[in-house]
Amino acid sequence: MAFDLANLGDDPADVSVTFAPPNGQVRADETAWRLGPRQQVRKTFTWEPSPGTPEGTYRGLLQASARGRVLTRPVALVVPPPRALAVRIAGVAGKDIVAGEGYEIKARLHNAGSSSATVTLACSVVEARRHLPSQEATIEPGEVVEVAWRQPAQDAPLATGEYQVRVTMLGVTGISAVGTFAVRGQ
Image (cartoon, rainbow, N blue to C red; front, side, top):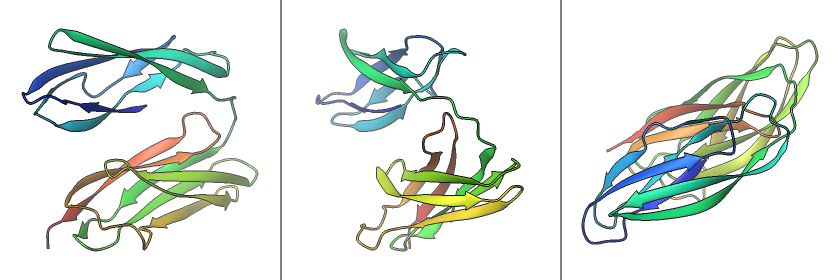
């Protein structure tokens, strides 16, 4: 789960955020930040439902605190139906590029099962908030295939910096992987 956190004031602010799910565990890299004036950041939490949580929509609460004020927002969480699948994402990578060049992201998929599998994959460049068109891949038993996404021609070049990419298998619980790449100055 990703959320945007913004300091709308003219002074720095120490902000803490908690996420209260209906059950299970929450993972977060950080839960407190110092934001400069007018600064905005994107942060993530990962919810791992308790084993045996039935499919359905659940409600969690996201709470942000700063300067003695507390803001609470409900968050809808979906537990999809379970699906046994022998396909895994064996790796995600983006090659470092020079500013102005187009990026390319590659995911390797491995089918450890005994029958062919067709999967649909979504790919996002997280910091740039770019969601690339989903792709479908069919993988025969024991095969490893590579799926690639290239920067769409109509997209503006990325600014210099480090980028995280996430590839997610759609319609399946918990199959995603991340990689990184950098855009360097010329």
